Image 1: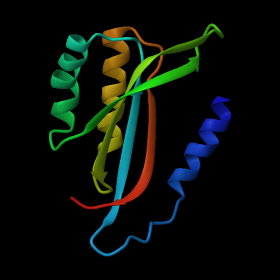
Image 2: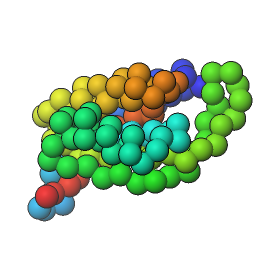
Image 3: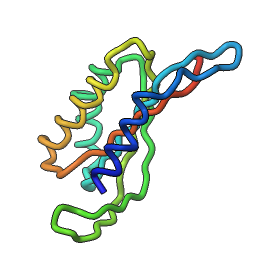
Image 4: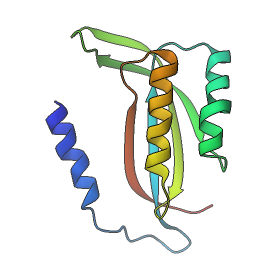
Length: 124
């Protein structure tokens, strides 16, 4: 499975620039998926301490239901959160998103945080 994900993600690096409709421009959408049943106060603290300093212009958070196979092979279903941010293509958004992933895994002793990067057309 990791090899399939790597192949799929490597295709993102070779995608041609998107043709956007008038009024929008090519941008990058970053989605991070956090599990671990973290309490509301702990989550708000993480957003304030880690996420907001890296994406001060804004982001969105949605509660989602997640399921994955852990390192032990056990299927785990849990309440999760999705963080989404749209950033210019010329920035370091992926680097900042990876720093958030690392901080979350360390702070809450999590096995993984999924990061999805895609090209979109957007305008603010």
